[in-house]
Length: 359
Image (cartoon, rainbow, N blue to C red; front, side):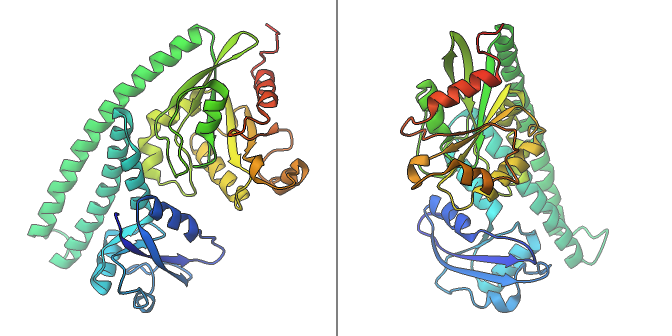
């Protein structure tokens, strides 16, 4: 998306909160420049064009790309492009592209390729339905339909092959985890919204050399470091960040990476206290953990970046997050960057893992 001039289009349905600023940040992470945002309040999406045709006419003619806030069907994308003459992506494709650019290891690349294949397959199915309608009904086998069937078969074969490769990786990871359990190592997984400071926390706790940058999804691979507490070795892992409405293609394909979360003895749920959307971001993390059947695991909530908040007040934070952070859940306030509050966090980890000298 180098130097693309982007127009965001979004439909806001009744009672729905949309965050076009976050989408703008994702687009900018790919090198695009958002020149316009068009929002329409509607009861539902237009089946043919997602947003109303009248609103499409408001799109800046200088835009070189349109990005839709919600996932689009094949027909919606095709119709928008025909009406505006501008190429179209949706938010899912933007996130998939970020993941594709961030993927460095074989594992991450395989998982991103699988997610993209899932996405393409869903759109090829939509293309087939559209071609069938254009061709005159069921049973018509025009050139367009035949081609989409061939592409769908090829994609299904590709998905099968990718899943086999990823399953082999998962089996190897399971052997590693079994080895850790035999040695009696406790495992902690750092989870949280993207850009909450998870990698910085891993480095501050374990001195693990990890890539850190202020951008979405800087980490796609599991990074594991060691922390010694009262002479006992604890393995702490950082993994891919979450986001609001994380595309289901990514949740499905990143099973190999996210399995680290499912197998952990303890979760550190890290969130950015300087964010204006703490509750929303925590709800998104909760939603993904629920999908992974991991929300009920032992967990410590870690309020990070307290150095960025003037007159920080933990009681006010407790009040603000009362509907999300359970009253009986530990809450530790830290600055991973400045290494503030880490001793308290280590003590809480020891307590939660029963490492306080009791055997």
